[in-house]
Length: 288
Image (cartoon, rainbow, N blue to C red):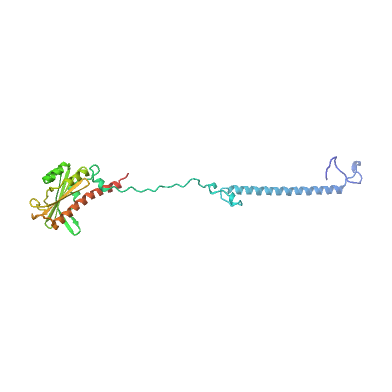
């Protein structure tokens, strides 16, 4: 049934119904009712389509939102894609750089034996000349007596004693060694500075450290001619007095006596240097 302006429209012909009015067109009414039913059905179907589309859109939105942190493929041209710096998590700061470090050089052993302020290890005859003998190559030297004194001039001949006194010798350590009838007394004089020891080396042209006998080393160099050497290393000046236990004179070019004296002079240097090495090593290992 359709409605226009002015009320219901009736079909042609027919007689009126009860009450004397005209009779309704029942066929037209039935047709109109059927048309209304069809429109209602399409409206319901259409609403269902819209609802389905709405649900699909909600699902799509939910999926995109749940994966928004994940990288996804894009249909955009390469020029429109984000740069690496725009991607979340991409760092814009330069990576840290580290400067190359070089470990400090090890301490110089000579530094520790050049001044009394740094040379703090104990000074004793046994510490300077340990053990009962010393070997170099195939040559074995047996150790005799040792001693130590703060009165340096008391154990040196007058010419050397005056040099020691003038440069403030603080201690003299002595040790004697013997091999095949040749004996050597090593004397290590101690000073406060390397400069003092160097002066002694430069001034010690004459005079010897007195020989030391005992513990298997007989008296020697009390008379006759003996050979002497002198040198300095750090704050130490070291001397050797070499002679025959038989009293025989040492002559120029005496290979046997010179060889023994040179061996023991080298031994004195090695012991002084080792003193510096030990203290330098301890300083390098000490916590900073």
